[in-house]
Length: 297
Image (cartoon, rainbow, N blue to C red):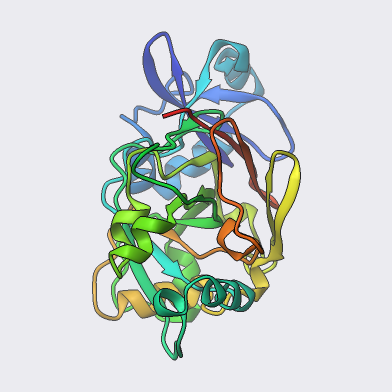
């Protein structure tokens, strides 16, 4: 299934789409009372999922929603906590990052790099990303697979990790490289308001049978910049869940951004950073397209 958060008549609601169809349906009109996407992720039971999948065509048609009537929001508008991010998680990206700044990104990395990203409100597809003129002079893009956990995870082994995943989305890990490198840690340069475009939806884990074999790419103004496959991750999705949960509880609703492949702006020669008016498209096989623009301020 695919879950969307939309705005209709001034209110946010969750819509659902089923495999093999393009139509979307109101979860509330299908008889499921959830406050928002976080509530769905954390509290929808197996029985409710089964009932949703088995909803009759008559009931679904009564709950159908025309996309012309709604505005897409980020699937999780307000994450329950900071996004957990993996840094330098593709070999070729590690090389280009080291060329840009050996001090910030170089050196040996025998262990996975983890950092967090503050998200007060996630940016929806088609929304503008602030350029922060005067504060940011090196705005960059990073297409990443987002993993959303559906139940608390503690001491989870690799073989069990998939059982804890609710679904997947696309994240553009927008980065202010001058702030990221100046502060010798990545939190500030990754966490300005508007720096977490996410969407267009959450695809449930059962719809992605092989998460370590998905095509992933980004385009800027129609020019392909990144093109890779999740098989080239250094740390896998399951490996990250196992490693993180060995020492901390990953609560239901946790979002994990799994790193970006090569082709970001700072890796080009010379670097090519985002400018006001630029269009950025992020695509991941089986999930969809996340499209944003850089604003003037």
